[in-house]
Amino acid sequence: RVQLPVEVIDRILQTLLEGSGRKFSSIAAFSLASHQFRVVAFRQYFSRVQLKKIRDINDILWFSKWFDCIRTLTITSSVLASKAIALHELHVTTMHISFALENFVTLTSRILVDLPQLPSTLKSLQLTSLPRISSALLKKIAKVCPELEELHLSVAERIDDSCCWGCLEESTTCITHSPLGDSRNSIEDLAVSPPSPLKQLKHLKHLSIGVLLSHETVLLSHINDHGAAEVPEDGDTLSSPSADISSAPETPASQQPAHSDEVVDGYSTPGIRTSLVGGGRPLHEDSCLPSSCPSCIQSHSIRVRNDEMTTSIKVAQVLRGLETIRWSSWFSSNCQEEDDASRYDGGNPRWTKLWILRKGGRIRVKRHPW
Image 1 (cartoon, rainbow, N blue to C red):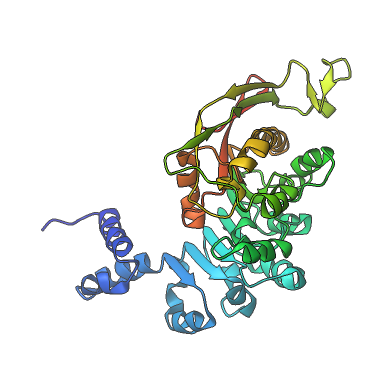
Image 2: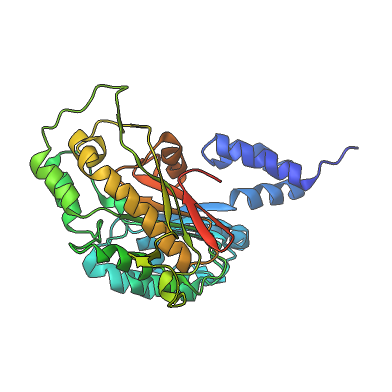
């Protein structure tokens, strides 16, 4: 009699579940073969759990003996607030929490109070549809989840471009999607302030911050002035050279000796080197957003993409273990960046990703893997 390794059986069941949308009916017959097979089937089925409503909690409580098998958990803020499941007792490594129903009024009371429930075993945490990303939130995450390797915080999902100009404008008024002020120093503040509370996350390698590194007036001017702008036909592209490779000292200039090279904008003059790489940037699907507006792309894309590069370097100087960083962006550069966003946002193209390389006492960032 030939015995298959348990790892092979797990892989077979995983493939069956993924192919059926994780319906138990796809492995039900297997679970009836024997007690051992039933244990393997239930362990694989409960390795990934999704709870969107309170009713889902009532259903899963019948199977509480299998909670130790949960490794990936997707829930909503209402499920988190119910405290029906002792999350801190689970051995979950990946968790996604949607705050789509939250607003500024309930943000503090709901999120900051409920986050201590999270298990300390988390390696990956995703908080989406946030009204804003605050320092208090980051401090709480760093305290509750010290073993995080991947952190995804996003506001951009709340920008509603699915209906009309009115809905778009209304959806942007109740969130902080573009936290930059009028001063250019706000880029410096944004690059240093948010990462600082995360410095105690010694294992953090991948960071996604779902805010736009463009001034909020980019969207406002687009709504007011470019609503009737003609969008190029399918297949047309707009080319704009932007910073696709940059480097800087691994230690911020403010911490270097006073006799170092002349400092400009926080970097030594020979220290930061930026390569301008031209090339076609395919337009996204036709929508009422700056990402598909030729006027906005022409006016803002180069500056915004350069700011994304500069800010990423500064964040990498604060978070020494960081390997990749992602930002929400109206001006993501290519299809590779869009594809990478799909695992969080259902294919939402409003993301740009940068890879970080540390070598010879310098930090280099690029929009493609090294």
